[in-house]
Length: 291
Length: 291
Image (cartoon, rainbow over all chains, first blue to last red; front, top):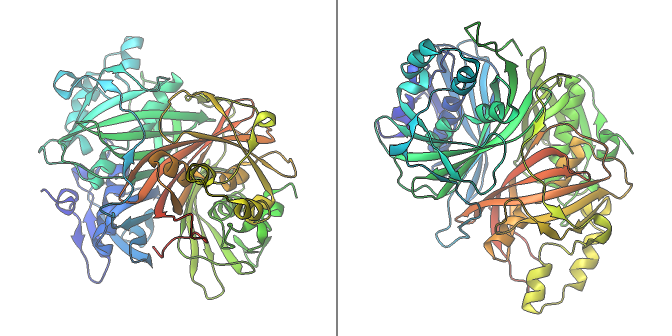
C-alpha cells in the first residue's frame, strides 16, 4: 500500500502509457462520485510512470463524473520528450470512451545543484496532536445557525476519501498574510505512510471550502480543476494544508493551498477554480444544481 | 484593435471552433519565438468565442515552439457543455499538424447576485507616472556585476511583446506579505485600451523573473505552462502585476502573479512553472540549453 499506484488502485493496461482503475470507496467523494483529488493523483502517478521522471506540475480538468464501481481507462502520453523535461498529457475515459478527466503537466529531473529555495512563510499553528478532528465544511455555519449535524459527521468519517485520510483543524496562532478564509488543516494517511506528491495532490482538493469561509456564505464548491506545482518532498507523515482563498466573482471562486511538511518545508502549491452553489442546511442532502 | 481577436490577429477558420493566426512581432518573445503569454491569450479568446461565455480559468502548456511568420491553427472545443459552465480544450498546431500548445480551461456565466469578494491585499506601490521604465530581467544583476547592457535595453523596446505593451517597475512601499523576489510591475497596452482577461494573461507571463530574483541567481526561465484564474474585470488602462515567487527546486521554479486594477481590485491570479537556466552575462546571447 506504500506506492502511489497501490494506494490509488492504478493498474497497468495493454500498451505503453495505458492504465486503468475502478472507482472504489477511497477514490470517491462523500456522495460516491469520483473525487477530484483522486483524478489528479492518478494523473501524477501515470505521468511519472510513463516518463520515468518526477512530476513538476499537473492540471486536471473535470469533464464528467463517474460513480462507485465504474472502470476508468487512463492514457498517459509524452507530448514533448525533452532531455530533462517531459510535457505530458493524461486522459481518463469511461467505458463508452467519454472523457472523465483531462490532465496536462510536466515531469523532469531536478538538477542536484540547481536553484533551490522557499520564498513563502509558513503560518504558526497548533501541532496535529493538539488539533481537533475536522468537523467538515459546514460545522461552523451549522453551529452558528443552531443546527445539529450528527448524521453528517457520522457519515463523513466512513465515506469516500475520509476512510483513508485523516484531517484535523489546526489553530492558526500567527499567519504571515492574514485575511478572510485562511484555514489550516493537518492531513495524513490513516496508515501513516509518508506523503508523496501524488498523495499531496489527492489531499489538497480543499480550496473551495476556504473560499466559502472567506465569503461568509454557506456555499459548497464543485471543482472545475485541480492544479499542483511540486517542489522537493521530505519524509512527512502529516502535511499542513495552508488554504488561501483569493477571490470570488458571480459564484465562481479561486484560491490556493500551500503544502507544508510537518517541519515547515514548502513542498508544493495547489490551486483550484470552483463553481459555487448555495446550501440550505435545513434541507439535506446538500448538493450542487447542475452546472 | 480593441477586441482581443484584433489585438492577437486571431482569425476565424472553416468550421466551428476553428481559428488561425500568424506569429508576428507582437506575438513573439524577445528571441522571436512564439511568446507564452500570446498562446494563453489566444486560448482564452478562442474559448470565449466558441462557448459564448466569459473565461474563468485557463492553463496553457507549451509543447513545441514556432518562430516569426509561422501559421498556427487553433481548435477550440467544448468538452462539457453545462448550462452555466463549459469545460473547454484549445489546441494550437503547426503546418505539419504538430501540437504547439495545449490548453484546458472553463468559461461560464457569472451570477449577478452570486458570491463575490476579494480576499487578498494589494501592495502599496508607486503610481505608474512615478515608476521607471522596466529595464529587463537582468538589469539589477548586470549593474551589480558592473556590466553595461545598452544593446539589450535598446533591442528590448523594439522587439516582441514589448512593441505593444509598456512595463514600468513599481517601487514597493508596503507589502502585505514581504519576502524574497517580490516584484511589482505596472503594465499597459501602448494604445491605452482597457485590459481584458486575455490581455492580462498575455501580460502575466513574468513569474520566472521573480523566481530568479528570489533565488538571488542569474537565471532565466522557460515557461512550462501559463495558468490564469479570472474574476471580474473593471476598466483599467494599467494593471499591477504583483509577482510572488513560491519555491524553486533543482532548477525548476513556481510562483504566482496577482493582477490588480489601478484602483486596487484583484481581477485575476496567474501562476506558472518554469525550467530555469543559468546565464553568463559576459557571453551574450543568453538562452536556454535545450530542456
